[in-house]
Image (tube, rainbow, N blue to C red; front, side, top):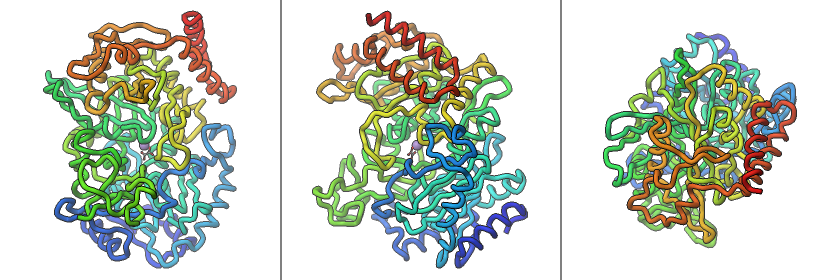
Length: 583
Ligand code: OXD
Ligand code: MN
């Protein structure tokens, strides 16, 4: 089925190991999608939703033990443990293969093996990279169709390129004891078994576009990042593109699809991507970004007409819902939806609040990006878009101000390396605990963070034209637990300040941690924000920040001698300045 012998022989070899009943090469056609949907409707993998209100929308209920990424079962397999780094779970490649291959033995008996060729990025972009996922899950195939450029065109490119990332996936028996997500960066190979959940099973996403791609990016001189890409068009018609890194379930999709508030007429927002950015320096040393994906696998709870009208409307047709609740009228329902009442919970039980939430907190929608009314026409541009600013952020009740700007690229790398955030339901584990999540890449960097920071730092030697780096925190709370900043569309007020800084149009207050806005430069007209709250959002406590910098320093030192000196120096000099200011 392919002229590329390396691909054909890999498919043959996997088939003889996993022993499927049938093999199907996916073309990515709409007819194929529809056929797979029908098959899943008849075997119960999917159910229809209210066809009048939610045309072409389907519900999938996963196994209740398979609802999120599993960082504790995710491995990077390299010869040397230090190459995977303390930020990854590690196994020797031989051991990894042996352990997981035993689980793949005969696992596709009675099933169909689907060969899914895909291209991450526009088909004709030099920045794109291809992969082939072999899977026994029809749910994965239809999700890959919505999320990537999948099928015949991708296969043609793979045959031309002669190279591709190999991804082998089986849902296995869904037993968490026999679940592993393994990466072999030196072999450009992924093996995943025992889970059908997006981040574990749609191998083009986290496994390829972040873990394997970050490793490839370091070798080839680019960056593969957990970042949304958004274009902000001013009323004067000028568009700035921002690449923003936030940990999972911290509002990346909402920011990427932001709806300007009425108080800022004339602004338009264009979405390039909501989760992953691949960043390259072009011939003029300008950093440019493409989104390797072409669809969204977004968190459903909280989505409504007020928080994200575009997303709310986007998921009313041609969408696959996973683990939401339903109403009596068979409409999908989730916490934060403003109408309807749940009657059936995400596990298919009669809804009873004693059992917990109606929709799973990590319930998801999968939808093609072309459904998004503000999808940028440049999302298909082979050269990507020029990036004016990089923005890091996290979910932090305390400490971090609304926004600040790093003083240099090197300082910005420290700001990124020091990102911390409260954990969310996107990963199996405790929720709400603050952990370090450098560049929002803790679960996704395919190699040692110390080498990754050195790679980031190296960009300063290659370009004098790099974007400015900022940090934002939409989640600051008062001592009573109220959010100090309204978030969502109002975040445009902060992004405007960022753009003004990029254009050197506005002054700032220099502090040891970076440039903070003068309170009067954040437009709060029409917002219910007290002077005290604004003061808290636009100032820092040097004593608390000194403690924070010490904690960042300890974290960085846990990477040992590979830690780049330039990063240590940044941390030490800022800590020293804070110590002077707080004494
Ligand atoms: C995601 C995640 O699904 O980051 O995007 O977990
Ligand atoms: Mn993500």
